[in-house]
Image 1 (cartoon, rainbow, N blue to C red):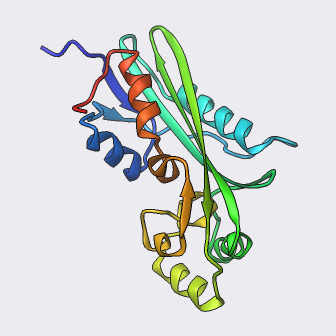
Image 2 (cartoon, rainbow, N blue to C red; image 1 turned 45 degrees about the horizontal axis):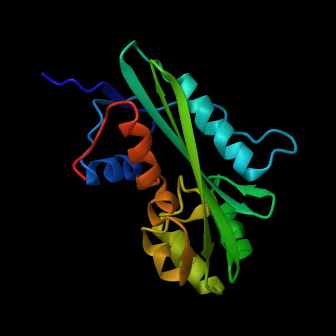
Length: 193
């Protein structure tokens, strides 16, 4: 008989599920949160990311004894928030903006249990190489940009465009392992590591 609480992953992201499984944590159920992720007027990227993650956690139906884990990843250039591009044209404009410069990737995690909510966020810096139009066109043709904050994923083909990061690789992917493991351990859920 398992004594750990049931874990509900409030995300449809296959990357977040993969990262959890890499540390020996397999959610009992996946219940993606469906919320409006539109930034509020004047909202700055880090506050936005924290708010969206907390909103997702509250939106997931949680039964007594269950733990809900949600996360959100935001790409920021200064105060500008680059969400998931609506189409290839917007993804291309994001890549042109990021080309040859550093930007921030913010990932926030929230865990809600019977004992309340706990949250952490991680800010990493990423530099994209200078991209030519042919680089951008080839990448857009892969379709890998779809559903990705900022229009790219470090763990996919766009990884070839990233010569430097400072921070957490897994946070850039969408779920900071260290912080997530600590949040879950605090509510009785531990992995293999």
